[in-house]
Length: 274
Ligand SMILES: O=C(O)CCC(=O)C(=O)O
Image (cartoon, rainbow, N blue to C red):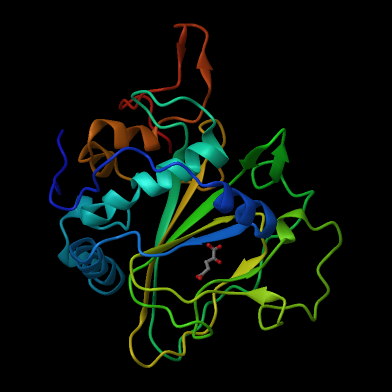
């Protein structure tokens, strides 16, 4: 199946992660890449995200997700592929991606709204699904979140906040170091920017205080091809409406099929993640 959104598909090969981006991601556990999307992409995906948040039933069934409709072009944007191939996948490119998408949601917040979850995550000794490592010059990020900001974010008005460096922390976080503590850092950015973070980095949503516009962000989560944290609950029709290579982001969670002698590099109805 060809893309249903050819006018929105980003062109070009994966954009390699720069040495500076690797340095910042390793140091802090998160990274901002500003100005990734163009205006038509931002407009179409923002409208879709708001509809998913406020009027989901009005969309065709397969488009009622933040990883479907026009928002599917975010899943394998060349900027994200370049970064995830470096920090999650470590495999040469072929017909499949070396990582999987396993969760996606929209943060639609008007001024005055807050999240229901306090700061969470953080630590060097967390479950291997989350844990962050850097060995022999390569980054191994477990569960990794990609946040697409679809409206401008003015710093200090409610983007995601991070306790930078906490993906490597060794002591329990003291209770007073909560999401309002000055050790938590955030960002300001234009619409169409993207933030990538290791889920091992302590982080939180914040009250949105910007009266000018709501927060509209899509938060996609990725993992290795052989690990899974979130249950997807995704109807097969959503994945089957995607181009072939994009579908491989939703393949089953395993590494090698010794019975048939095949590695896990394909999506099929009997090889889909649950
Ligand atoms: O809503 C946010 O800004 C942060 C989302 C979050 O806490 C998470 O992805 O675990």
